[in-house]
Image (cartoon, rainbow, N blue to C red):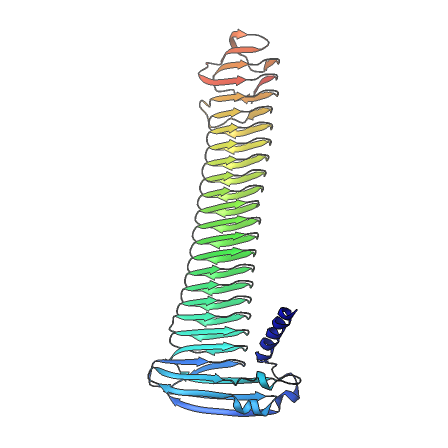
Length: 492
């Protein structure tokens, strides 16, 4: 029992020792108020401000004077009189500090509030270090390097030049506007907004959203549990995020985005783009370079890709349209649909269908448990699948399809000349339509099925389950192999 009492006593002492800041919510809290003013000569170096329990405003001016103005308020006059401001000239610049008394022995009834709102004007070329806690910080117009550190309040940083600048906060927002020079911004439990940044920008945040617009250089963002938005970035963009959506648009350089449990939307990228994601959809539009997506449990939609597109995902479908180069897609448990591909097309899926239209290169598809449809392929076609039908139409090259337990249909062979065809399946049918101007050497065999041809074949072997011979002058290979299914040869 005595141990519990001692713990409670210790907790009570801690609570009594903590100063209480209640602001100016009640007129009775403003029983004491006094103004402070001091001007100091700045001979170079750095202005250092250490402040707490009140708002801090910093502005710049011409000349070599540091001006300090403050308002001290307290609900208790004795405590208000004990609050001091130290402003001194030092060899390395100017130091400004608010000093508060220890008040825990004076808290008996009710509550006590006190604050100091401070405004400091510094030379524009002065380096600045400003710390604040339990109040907002507003800094504008600095022309040299700065270090701003705040807690339990918002930060506004604007119209800066020079640099580098380091801005840090906790439990409050950060709002930066029109800042040249490199910027490093750190926050937790608060949003970050940066607009019109002229130098390299590095942002770290947790439990808050990040928004960047009109950045003139490279941008690196690391966030967790908050959305990221990046618009109008002149340099490259690198984003790492968890449990927050990422949206980026109008990038002059490349983009590298990694996130989990969130959606990614990317548009109008002048360079290449790499996206890594899981448990969230991916949308990419207007990437002039290559697009690489490595995703898990995600749906991927991409359109207007200038270079190559390589997409890997699982438990999500892929839709790809208007790609300037080759397209390489791997997924499981999802459908694949591509249209208007400028180069070769390769796809592999399980438990999903594949559909490709207007491919200006060869097509190589591996699938199972889903249908495959290939139309208008300007090259060779290779298909390996099972438990799904394969339909091929409008091919300028050779056709090689191996299926299991699914039908095969081939038509629209075009482009002139010999186009070798090799088709094999079981427990389903094979149907092929041939152009009338090409000679084929036919080797068609099946088990427990029939063979029918609408084109005359000069046979060397003919029967219900086998047909060997030539169409026209022969020469172009036509191999059709089946078991437990029929084979049909038609004229185009």
